[in-house]
Image (tube, rainbow, N blue to C red; front, side):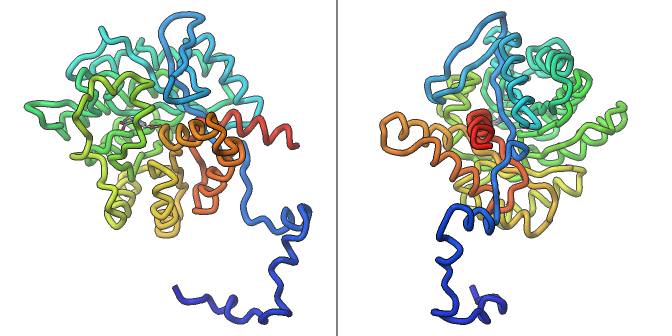
Length: 340
Ligand code: PBG
């Protein structure tokens, strides 16, 4: 990388001493280029059937699956702390899973009930719903499977139904996480035709076939369904970055309001390139495995969990992310509030 002109022209040592601006906290904070704010964070939740139910997720320390009544209390906490949006993922009971995942467009499914409950109890917070079939399929795949193949166009029809159903329940941000080709355009068109022109689309635009999703799949119970199968015919190859720009370009052209890169930390180069190339609102998902790594090391006393978590999230900001989905949103927002 060649040195930008304004850097090449700075006077050499001893006239320039970069440590001068690092000498004390007040000086460092004056020149800080980035800061973490609760307003940058999106808190994901796993929703359970029933009442008064909470279940810890062993591979996600500090994260619990919650029934809707308990979920509402946590969503209120988010709103109080200035977290602008929550993302919901349902833990669908096994008896409701099918090969085509039709529970996804049941207007009374767990997710739609949770959306309605939140929009009634905490209307000022944004609600994001994932559009993909994996919480609902017996295969654990995001799409409809026939003879071992994930069908693209048939899946789009299902995703459109799912998106309409979520929007009708009051979901503010529709987030296709399935990586089928052409789904953003189809969903935008259907939303507009159904009178949901205000529904925002946050596209999981560059989503990689990553091993870092493991704890998430434990949390929603798709891991056992998926077994040894993978998602490599639709999620991206971790080797690719130019292809990520193509994916993002298509999703923007099809009507995405916000694009997302996922996972986060191992893909910060992609976040930076996407932000620079397109300049549209760019989010990143600090996924379950990334969060679990910090928590696991902190439990062993190997890392300072709180400081590492904040350092990770700040790295997203530095790379150009406008927003970050992270399981640590609440704990980080709470610490920021205590620091004043
Ligand atoms: C489902 C979906 C996944 C995540 C978000 N939506 C998992 C997957 O694609 O298998 C992962 C989130 C995380 O790991 O925190 N389509």
